[in-house]
Length: 254
Image 1 (tube, rainbow, N blue to C red):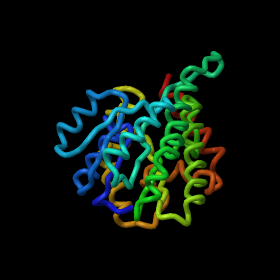
Image 2 (image 1 turned 60 degrees about the horizontal axis):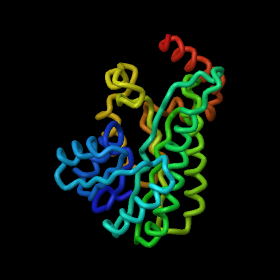
Image 3 (image 1 turned 90 degrees about the vertical axis):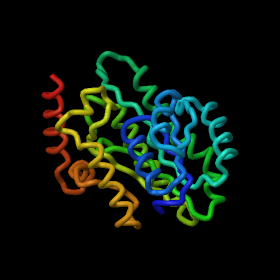
Image 4 (image 1 turned 120 degrees about the horizontal axis):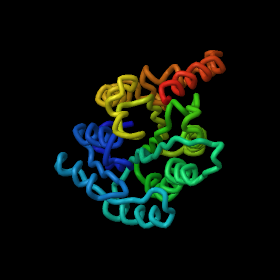
């Protein structure tokens, strides 16, 4: 992925990893457009980063995505990169039989990127060079039992990304997957932002940008902290890793 002179959309850009990526790419010399459901958080980010733009988007709503894509490509005809960062993560107790949170996570985390990619792909393919970056998770590879549907949506994002990359192999559109570990954001509440078990956000972003710069052929962007999850199965340690990981996380939750 070229690191400058892009016109770049980042969904979920009002906070957390999305905001930090937006600021890093903005500083690197890109026209960055951040998107999110609420205008106020977006305004705070753009006010702190003169020249950055914003547009509201309900990523869980199919009609909203179509309208957004039309407006975006009309206002920014040079759009050549998108980072699918928007996502929600909610704990679930599966024996309670509730599916509202599960359906919301599927709509936001999985259907959202699929629908937005479909809407933007004709325009991206028309560019001399373009990039689609999905954001999955280390939990795509070792699920967290406390967040089953979130983990499942991220596993699906990984699978979708691989298939998309293969289908676009003869085009000028490259397809990348960013695979974060547990990072200090507010994805699961304010306490996560200071959780010492989580990777500091600034440290995560710095390592991501270094990988993009120094390993331009990499299709999966994996910081060191996520590699035990990403490669647990390949290393033949999956069953033990899954049990110990979930036992530890369950004990912390209680």
